[in-house]
Amino acid sequence: METKTIVQYVVAGVIVVGSLFVAYNAQDKITGQASEIKALQNQVAVLTDQAAQNEELINQNKALQMEVKNLETKLATKTKATAKAKASAKTKTKTNKKAHKAHKASKKK
Image (cartoon, rainbow, N blue to C red):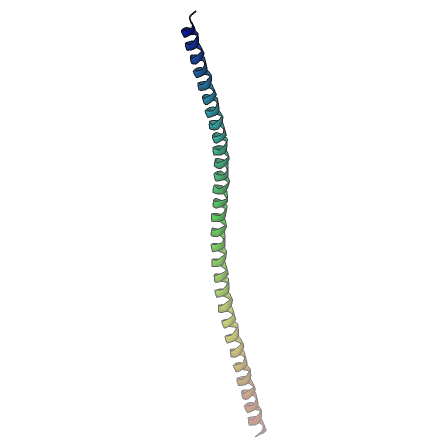
């Protein structure tokens, strides 16, 4: 074999080995990036679930706020009705006492 041919085979071998080394490193980087992508996808899934839970809690909070407002309105209405009833009862009591006194006074005469 000629020296020139041997050198060509050696150069070709070095090129092949270098190419395999570059390909291996690239494959390693791709595998690492795929792992990072998978981890990020998992984080996105968790955050999406948390966002859905937050949305549900916000809706529940709004419903509870409406219920509180309705109960406050009912309480205010009942309080006003109770106050009117008490005032009416006091007026009736005073009227009854006056009528009773007038009746007594008319009997004494």
